[in-house]
Length: 369
Image 1 (cartoon, rainbow, N blue to C red):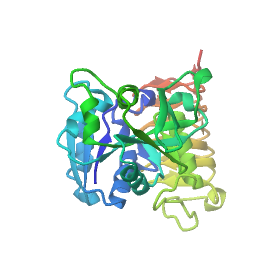
Image 2 (cartoon, rainbow, N blue to C red; image 1 turned 45 degrees about the vertical axis):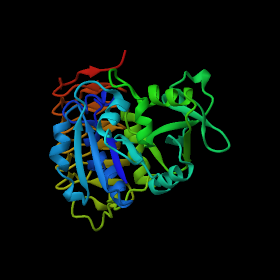
Image 3 (tube, rainbow, N blue to C red; image 1 turned 45 degrees about the horizontal axis):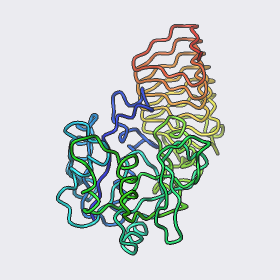
């Protein structure tokens, strides 16, 4: 079994976090999202992975190399211009003679890939799509199935008033070499917007594999934080999840009693002041420092960032090497780009995004309009 991973997107909904790194390398519990996808493929004995690259693809190659560290062969292809998801797969898989897996690089899921593969082999359709049940289906492509699990209808991101199903495209497929013949080579062409409707219009059989295991598209800061909390609560099963047992941890240097029982994951060399408060959950990257009386609630703080005394950080994502000065406040939904400085008593309002290298002066407030 070979697998192809779509990893070329620019991650615009995650900006400014993706300005310096491609979306698949966004840290999740302190290691890149793409690590989890590769590990899931290794666990089902995939024979080879091809990663389809574009934006900042060299950084992905630098991390994964030939795949020897993961125990699997990894190769790469670049888009050579805008091809869309379907066009990129058609180019990368042009020499395939057997069905193959296709996965998006920004999805966290506990889908049973082996069962998915076996489902396709039983149904023997032109293409099989994995479908997850969600509460907000209008953000995704949606499908309805016949009794034999073939796709009766598929519509990409309908408006809420026209939603007819809560089964959504999970960004995971088994494709056949025959399906590639329907992908034009001279235009940008997407799997969800182009290929799936085209196959249905031609009367080809697409089957839908509806699964109940956890799935989350972490393409937005809100879903990234939600997936983090889900993992810490055990809704998303992560092998080897590093829950901190505070009384045994050497990473937290003080105030074990105050922090015991909180959902906290820390990187190496973190320093948390004795009077700091961690509420809800927090994930701290390497070398993060939390000052006296600071309050952290529902946050992910990337490596090298410092939160000074009396600062309050709630439900936000803080990039690498950020300085949040004493008394500053970052409200829910805010995203702080790498190497930014939030001055003393400054206020970053709800859902505000600060670009890489931003400087917010002491006492300054930045609120939404």
